[in-house]
Image 1 (cartoon, rainbow, N blue to C red):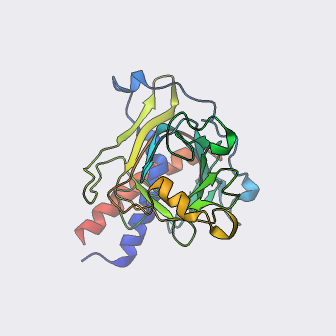
Image 2 (image 1 turned 90 degrees about the horizontal axis):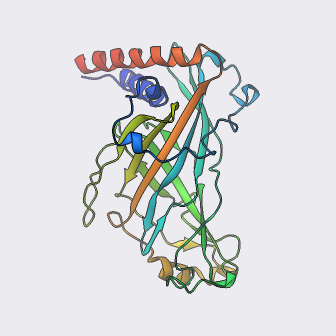
Length: 293
């Protein structure tokens, strides 16, 4: 029988290993050699400083990572939107080398609003006037989770709200909220969605052919639901209009996220990356021991 303490340690080690994967990423495959160019947003300029790490943190056991969504699509209800502008997530993660307790410092999602095809009416070509244009900007409804402990198949769990931007909708119109977020369980593997969606697969991490310190992958989820809009227009009067345009709420199994990503990382000291590699080895030993018990 597995003991709870061992399960907690295994889960913590898995979260550390998610950042350390780059240390053992495979060489570029034939498909990777045709990878898209690396956008300038793939940089570590937004890393939390040492002063921003939790009190008592040992920089020898901390890493900064940036994950940039460079392409793909997000389909929610009746809106199927290509990702045309990079969206960046920068975060630092570290651990106690004895207990493997994991801590994170997350930056906000960073990226320009994406213009939604078809605008307010959902008809391509009708959004020539600014009043009829619709833009969307994803925001965190809560801190994301890296390799969450409750499911080893998930790479990132993101709880999102999508800010909907239009002059008539005001500045508080969102799909999703802190109380009722859009929860994406993104995986490199194959999904298991409820019908009518069918399983889809991501792509594992591979070194980019143009820069061995940049790692490309695709993460996917098509098993999530999307709630109604809120805060749209004066006194929420336009909530039903936003819902009608987007086809919301949209039940689980009718939405799809496919995110093409590029990532890079650096340690806070020269020893950081080596320490994370050691933790990855320790993780494997803990898993083997927990399985045996």
